[in-house]
Length: 213
Image (cartoon, rainbow, N blue to C red):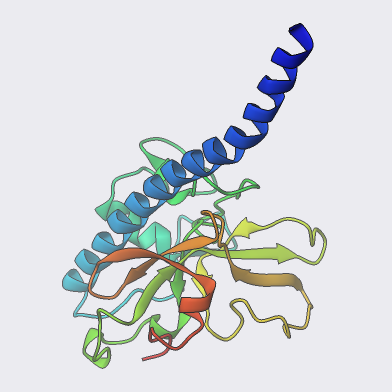
């Protein structure tokens, strides 16, 4: 009886473990989507305060200990009040800049290694240039690997249609660049009207959405 009980438990575990794993990832996806929604709304508030212009990729600031630069997440963070400013995830709810499904930790570095990247095509442009905001990508779950550690997938401040999910990318200073489809094969996305949604790679690459306004 003991043998059959153990055998049955093993079978049930083999069946249920993938179900539990998918459910856990679904919860992480929801948390990540919430993060992205709050960041997208903060970007829209920033635009409203700065003459309808999207933030630049980075700016030179006097207080920065990151080669003098602060990347766009640091510029947006005051609207979120997470407390993320310098080289560390210090104070407040800085987890909003971190995807709970990230396999490796990111170092923040004044926003350069945030787990969410802004579409590089909209850095510094006037909002009016975006004719279809509900279809135009604002934020993606971007990753980067340095040549010195090609196996790592750190968060990255910039998402670009030029390299995202491109198998022809030629490694150089960066070993790889792309999008994290870590949520049961899905990635979360924010659009320029502020709404967020999850999509799989096939739909994102199928021309349904605007990557460069």
